[in-house]
Figure 1 (cartoon, rainbow, N blue to C red):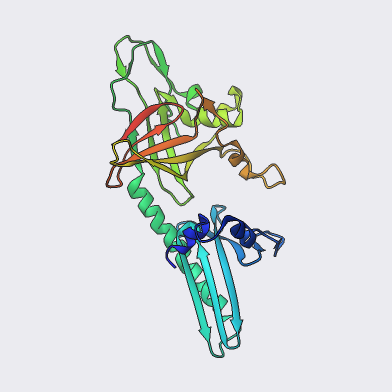
Figure 2: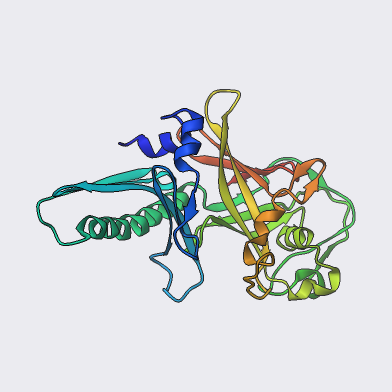
Length: 307
């Protein structure tokens, strides 16, 4: 039972043709398309609010569950698999229970486990990934330059605040970022600088094709989501874990049309490329004990060590 959710997701428990036969939707059961019926399973998309978020907030997330339920005489059974949380549970009822008791129990289990596991996941992610990352190498810049910085939150730094460095003295690259965990999905990036340039604005503007006259209206947001891709370091002592970033301008109004929706940010994955490498690819390096030691943006090609 423990390995069944991921076994189902990775198609390890059945031939691929049978997997797609059993799990492909035949028809949807509601206008909202949150559930559909396949040959074998009832598939549900559950959405729930965070423990730290008010119920009237627009921040919620989906978790998919595969379900099989039925009864013979006075015996009732329900199987539920949640691959994204790596859990599953069964409900067995016998005798003359009230109508729908097995579903009520499953509902109680879901309402208990989903918020709790999400809270635990955020706590673990905060302990593992959250923190300040900074370049600590020997690369320097000695040219006359203007280093932009965001000293006033919510205002575009290019126009309002700037710091000019007129010196030929070699100085270490001013590259850093801050990773935090909040009540929204994924990891949040703040104060992302590359050699003094505020990449929060640059990345969001490049992803949305924002022209310079609209820069001061932007509220850039950069969030990281796990890709499930990782590889072992050449030394064999540790691994690299890949995350994808979503660049979004929070100043834009909410949209819920057929094609123009808030989910359009996912269409732009890997849309910003520099030197044949994606700007939205972040690779965390972890040691053999599972501790994050550094992060590297694929396009910027610069390792930032965790402080």
